[in-house]
Image (tube, rainbow, N blue to C red; front, side):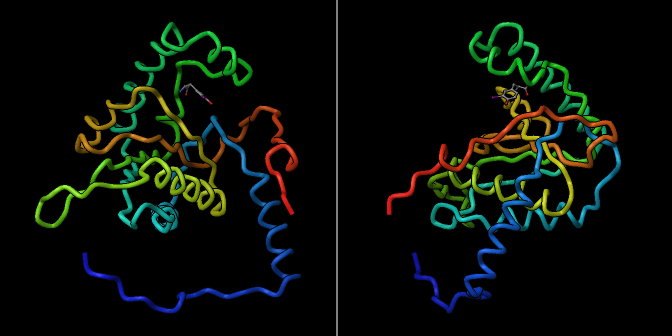
Length: 223
Ligand code: IYR
């Protein structure tokens, strides 16, 4: 493969230390108020906002810059209905036997069940696909690398971008998700990774009163 041209980092700038400290603290404060929401308003969201959040996700670092993802943004009510029906079918099986007791016990405090009305109520569902391989111009297969890591990072950036824009989201993973390939007409080398349910919270939306682990529980400094 031909070598890339190398150029100075476009757009990088260093901040004075104090400003850097302030920016990091402010960003943490903003991220700390993000909550996963399950009760959505049906108010539509501007397509331009979704487009820019997807552009932000598409900037994610990834294996060999092969960008092994595809995002399908669904606002069509009929397609959302089909996705809800497909997801609820899988979830019924999950909650009534497929899930081991230990898993159901871990989920019990959240109060989730097989009913997924948000898949129709929320204005936009972003279905994220991970591409096990790409397709080159000549039709040959291009193997992708670190697909799970790459798509996971892109999803984190997408969730962050949506939060930054003032929207809420829910990472939803009915399992298995193969039904999404059929409904959305995606090829079999694309594996559904998650459904990101996106919109405004319902006026009466509630979230569980949960806490995040403290820094000393999640990080070790070796100085
Ligand atoms: N996919 C199911 C179950 C579920 C699993 C986990 I792990 C969660 O954090 C939440 C739900 C559902 O969406 O109900």
